[in-house]
Structure formats: C-alpha cells, structure tokens
Image (cartoon, rainbow, N blue to C red):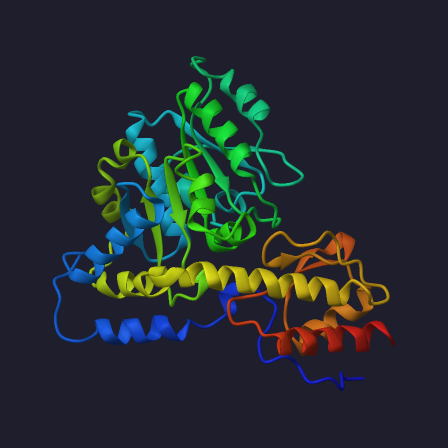
Length: 356
C-alpha cells in the first residue's frame, strides 16, 4: 500500500542534491555582465583570493577548481611535487573520500600509492602515523609523504582541533606534509564553534599545509577551492592545477560564487542550518518504533538502522541511499535548504511505514 503522507519537497539523499543559494545565482548573473580576462585575471577572482586570506587571517594561496575531486587531486599533486620525488605515498583513512569515492583518481592521475589505515570512526591517529613512518628510509616501501585527513569524515565524525594539531605535529616530525579534505568544511566549522576562529583552530593554527575548501555541497552551483596555508607548499600550484585539468578559463563565475557565500559568513550560516536540520531529524525519528537512530549527528548526516521491510518503500517515496545493507543501515543527509517542514514530512512517512 502506498504512503498516504505527502513526500517532502526536498530529499534527504545528499547535500549534493540541493540547488544553489539565491545569492550565488545572483552573483553569477552579476558576473556575467561584459567581458573579463580569462584564467583568473579578473576582479572577481582577485576579490575571492583576498577573501580567503581574510578568512584564514593569513597570506594564503587560493586555487579555484571545478569540484571536490579536482581540488583534492590538485592539492595532493602540488604537495607531492613539493616533496621532490615520485616515490612518496599519501596516507589516509580507509574511509577517506580519496580512497573509496574518487574512482582511484589520485592513484591514476598522480601515479602514487594510497596507504589507507583502518579506522572505525574514519579518523587517523598519530600512533598509526608513526607505524607507517617506520617505512621511511626503507627502499622497498613507498615513502609516506602526505597525510590526508577528511573533516568531517565520511562517517560524519569530527577531528577536534587538538587532534588535528597532534597529527600535523607528528606528520611534520616525520617530514610529511598535511592535506585536509574539507568538502563539508562549513558543517565542521559550525559544529566546532561556528566562527572564523573555530575554522582557523583546526586548519592554519593546527599546522595544516593545504585545504580542499568545499563549496558545491554548501549552496554553490559548482565550485571548490584549494587553499594553501603553507605558501612554500604552494610553489608550482598554478601549473599543477592546469595539468590536472582544473584551471577554469571563465574563472570569474567560480570566484563570484565564493564571493557570495564568504561575504558576511553566509557559508557558515548555511553549514550551521544543515547541521541543525540533521539534529532535528535525528531527534524526531529516534522515538519511532523499530528505528535505531544511532548517535546524535556531529554534522549534517545521520546513519539510522531501519526495519528492512520499510527501506525500499521509503526510498521509492523519497529517495535516499543505503549505507550498510548488512545492518539495514541507511544514510540521511540534510542541506542548506532543508526546512523544518521537509523534516516533519519525512518523519511522517517513516512513522507511517514503521507503524504498519
């Protein structure tokens, strides 16, 4: 029997499913007026680069890219070049996006090895890094050169600023550079304090060398950025970005998107809102029969286990992705435009099926 409840206007499949914020659309339209020199030689890009330096309160190097995978590849390729040698490997969690969700792009494009470390919470530890560091100097092993962390992780967990600082200290002690994949960095920042100071605490202040700064998942049409907090590690990044096909000719349109959300910290407000909606969704479904809501969300994703009989009907009504089919676990994500009404409508559908 089909659900009688009306489906929500917005799904809980992914923040990638959300549209762009009106301010972003308006900024792109405004940037469309007249001609502007290509490849970043325009006023929009200059303003965007200045905005990122202000955001991190540091003289950073910013390279805009088309998407998150491109940002990660461009960042890692530049850091690997800084290490002067193709014999270096990238260390990451087994859950890392670069390891399981990028179709082996780093390996194929960079020609490097990913050393993926097991982690139930998707977080690498300094102790694990030191074990890997034992391979340094051994000619039979790829040399650990870059540590890549994801913040928040693919499991919705967060590193604290202290944990990232400890990892950076260990990595640098071992002669490694540090990359942070921040595809959902707005959500992480909102959860860890909700201020620019909070962002800086787990990035530039912690010792991170390069950040993939996500925009596409947070209200942009399609734009991400590599922000090099360590200028020495950014040497050659303008050439590397071109080599890995991430140099936009009409860069003003990517820059305009970031300018729209960096102004007045709209990027942070959007991340905070999606986090709040995830918490609301979690609280509402946690009391439903047969639903194991799981831990309270740190960011904008929850991973409930559902009665197996309701998963397919619920997906047909309002689509979302399976997570661990062996546990009947799914993933629900909120976005910058998720409303309370969307949450309530979705919960009504879950409740109707769970109560049958």
